[in-house]
Image (tube, rainbow, N blue to C red):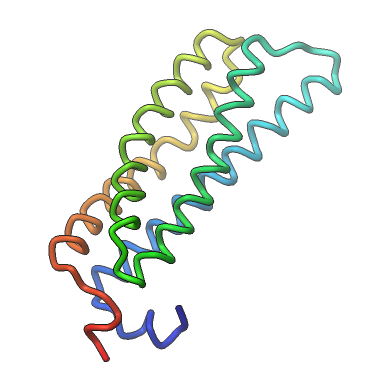
Length: 147
């Protein structure tokens, strides 16, 4: 993908792709923030209840970021795998959100404040991305159509 391809895209596709990349940045930051908070607590001699589950969620966010970047790249090849990754991501988002809340409530609560701070922009990006994804795949646009 180059800048010319991005420039030729319809506005809704550009918007959806940009919101997808924003979600990747938010999740990468959230994963890093959660892991750094655990390490900071260890440095101060405090323990974290449910640490294994919290770390698993953070690492899951990094894996999800990689999958989304692959999906956005495959989209330009008009690949069915891109559709499956994006829609699978939507299901996984709900699951990871529920798991995160459960872990935050079961642990000593420090994750809950972080998730609350990230919830609003993440929810907005997800809703906008969902709308755009539906439009992308129903229209079936690809960069090859513009050439």
